[in-house]
Image 1 (cartoon, rainbow, N blue to C red):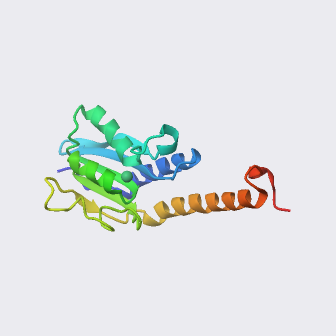
Image 2: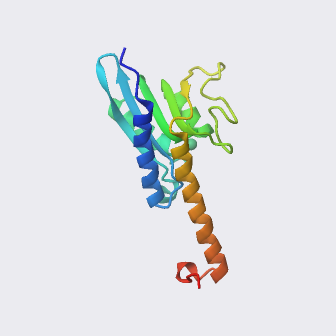
Length: 177
Ligand SMILES: [Zn+2]
């Protein structure tokens, strides 16, 4: 057996990707896929961040982007011996894709009260009626993961408030007097 994965360390990589999404104006969620096994050093084989806006793609969530890359690296849709790290609890689409991909384990940061499908609204990763189940580790670096999201939405709200204040065309130009 490989030694225990350092969840906080790998989550740090996912958090860095979330910040990258924020720079592009995307809701900041980041994910990585780590391949691990008995005789190997764990390594990242997939990286993703939310790119729905830049790609005009409703399925371009961080987890999907990371799993697509991992599949290309492994040359297989079966992501065996893989752990997916994601900053936010996965939605139904992503939790479903992880089950489909036979991912071994999911480690997430903060819970998603509006769409969480691992623990919060649904339990898709541990539902015994499905043909595959994942080990779930929740709450790793949760405060940092939630912080990135909170900052993003707070900035967006204040931006919108400014726009509302100055009229739609005013945009950023109208500074506070
Ligand atoms: Zn998702």
